[in-house]
Amino acid sequence: MRFLRENSLSLFFGALLLASVAGQSVAGQHQYNADATEHGEKAISWTQYVVTPEFGGDLLENWQSEFLQFSLYIVATVWLLQRGSNESKKLDEAGRESDKQQRVGQYAEANSPAWAKAAGIRRWIYSNSLMLVMTAIFFLSWFGQSVNGWRAFNNTQDEHKSAHISYGEYLLNADFWDRTLQNWQSEFLAIGSMAAFTIYLRQRGSPESKPVGAPHDETASSG
Image (tube, rainbow, N blue to C red; front, side, top):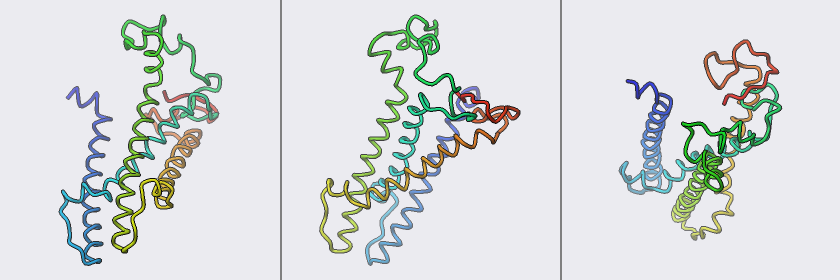
């Protein structure tokens, strides 16, 4: 019970992720088979569907945009500010902050992570590890989306008795950028709205919100 309580946030969203991916796979299989029947083709099983480029592409389209959103947000909030927003640091705290503020090197505490006490490249890597990992996952999932999208595009070309295109040609194709940008714009809308809404709106008890009685122009980082 202690483990569940101390990890309830990640476990809750992990369970939602698995449930939604499972639901997407079932719904996607039914839609795939409906399209196949319409074109006089054979239906496929669920296990066959989850390894198709159609499913992989749809899944990774969403993943890459989410990790792009957080990668940009992590970097942008180091230097960029929004007066009154709980998503912003205080107006006089822009930048990477001092070693003392960040508790690294000689200012590290006894229970600080080992790499926070280190010097040189190890400290730099650890100091930027959140951004580095998020960005790496973004590029990997974006690459996965492009490969699956290319394969799915050529499958559609087969259905229309048209010629295949190369991977490089697909990266310049409107289909790839339509799939990419429709996800990016929704993420930018969401994060921008969150930054603005937290100036005036509240949710009691949530770290994503200022205290209910805080003035609108009070800028305080949720971190």
